[in-house]
Length: 364
Image: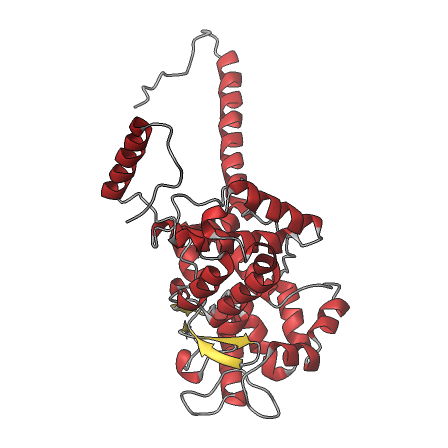
């Protein structure tokens, strides 16, 4: 039994409310006001714990966003009392406090995902209050794109055991966690192909753990460009143990998996890229360059997604838009049509009979 949320001026008004509520119950649109009294912070914490399929790094990110940017400001608010105006004000205050647009967008997307579950699965809310236009978007700064020559120069400046690391990351569009998790059994003896089946993830307080790739499409087999296969074969023979599970890339001292902070410090990645005039270049920018090169190869969106390891075509479309090669080919073709037209017009002017050489062609 549930009481009405307010008193009514007349019996007729009460009957109208009862009739509407019964209709909502029958159509599955009714939400229990008592359940909506749960505080957002408690519900969001449960949501992160119970959400299936989240990678360890994602769980840490969500908990940090909740702890740092959501719970101190909205954590005590009951779900049923959240409104779009409250969410809009919270977002505005975060930005005014100096929180970056990127972090604020991530926090907003987490809040929206949590409340979507409250609406669609748990039926606690009738609608999602996260309806602030554009709040989910972040405009990251354009990353630098290195050339093929720069990639080889960067590889040459690396210690020998990490030369192939740079080449594979760039020419096979691999993430740091994917390339550092490769084992001898994940690559052909002649280095003609490699298989991405796992990734190393560094979780605060837990160190390096082995997990699945970033997305379902991240599990993939890739052809290694023939031009760098000899480099990889040489690396296998020189630096990789014979066991099938031996890591392709490991620390020189202990043979353990590579940790990014140690790699940056001991290999002096920051200094190397600065000396090359590429200050600020991230290791992930090697994958970025590889994606750009792949998009210029005239591949389809589906094939590009497969090579990148993405199950969302939006990223592939971004890379395809980033290259102007296809647009240049279209422009060249249109220019040729204009040239042919002008040449035809000239020939027509030279026609002593003054006739037209053109023919109307029906278009279907």
